[in-house]
Length: 241
Ligand code: ASP
Ligand code: MG
Picture: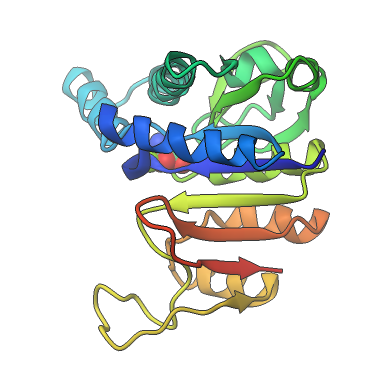
């Protein structure tokens, strides 16, 4: 049975209704005969709001505590999504980065993943569970919570796809794929059906916000095909290969 990793960004899980819609898409993937590991971002503007809250307390917060606070956003979405899946009769279980063992270096707020322990995920998949993982976070060897930098849930998804040898990593957001220019600014911009890792890395380093740069680098390194598409419709997205 093939394994698919799906990542849903903040707008895709922004409300209870959106979370239920995402759960229907996941159930469909499972029914199509795949094992599914899902990575989620924090709901909507949660991360920005948590940062504002921190800065109401101090302009120089301890980075260790910033990471603990920011990591909660993704934990809430993961547990809500697992709850939604359970409520429609699916076996689903959520995990934090710490519970899984996504090991990172100690660079708070911009940590790099060093190692991913797959054992827990594999055990649950074998029992028939859909596994939902909180994105954007890890833990150091010293068991301190870290976050991976803004937009880092993409990197969580690709790291899991690489470690679990997934067939594909699907990145769902509110954009339909990779365009020749920002479609919000250039209305004539057209969607690309396929793009290479190298071209995508160039776009990301020029400021395209479709994918986290580290996620593309990692996908390239481990040859994980990425599929960027919208969670709001069924249209074809862009394959990065
Ligand atoms: N929630 C985090 C952020 O807003 C991580 C992510 O969305 O990937 O940057
Ligand atoms: Mg976000």
